Length: 454
Image (cartoon, rainbow, N blue to C red; front, side):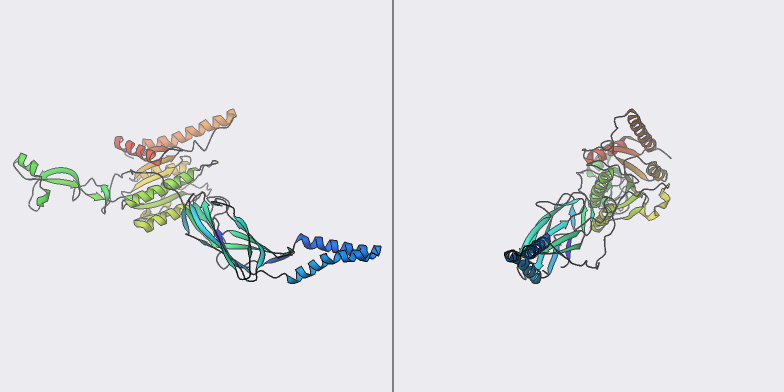
């Protein structure tokens, strides 16, 4: 039997813990040929009839055993290896979570097979959109058949090679050929983007052209101020109406449009999970949405996943940068660690000066909060979207557990107040609320608050 392909999540049992499966060129498992239960049954019947004929001296009993013996002899003699080849083609190797991904499973038999059973072993999080992942077909000699179906990735992630069980039976159902094929496809399921129309504007802009109105004055569209005309000013910048009122030439000054540097600072120290929701899931979806929107505005976007394992993407522009960011987000997981980390472990080029650092965190680990405080102390423009875990963590029925829950809420409130005292805007993104609401809350805070000196 031949090679096959379907999707399996690269990580193991946990949706966050991805590891590569076997590399290409993995040795093909042998085909296992076994006798079906019918062989044993026919042999027992034939042997019992022959034994009875000898003991009872009844030749007609030997005649009764002949059909069973004949079926065994002919069936085992004529049984041939079906020489089945199985392959799977995916319409694409990238998809969005909860979207359909068309797939085609091709099977071919060189010698023909009366019954071919196929069972696609899908990993957790991947399913067949319509129908079942098990099927049975009959193939003539040299016949090839293609089975079409749709896969659906219920969750974002990287799904590596899965396995497919192939079982063939001969015409008399006496012999069974079994093989478990390792598939060599990878599906990358990108997170669904959230609705977001307005973005958070940084306090400082960079020197490149972009979509943000800079505070400086220069060539641009947005009106800034009036000043007296000096030789060398362009005629089209003269404000003739204001000049007529003042009896002297005055020109318009404008704010130029510049791009910004945005660093998405993702908390991977902890992940609070419930039956249908995870704080890390929400943070990854928010990060993917923000990255796409900022890149659409020609801003440079970088990523730091700050936790047990440090992952980063240097700020950049364009479509290629978007794929870098999202594929790094797909690899983000929680690695338990008890060591204290600070921002000194982050390479300096990952955090440009004047960058907007946008934190995405459930505010449960003081190490991440300390890192945000450190960044603010170094002069970075910091804002935080809190992934509210209240919908995931609920108090139990006992008095002690309810008291522990209240203490945990107070501890989170202390962490939040530390950030607010430094002038860091903190907004809560609750379950079921649009991401745009949380971003607008940060915008409102920054309009009416003044950054504290550290």
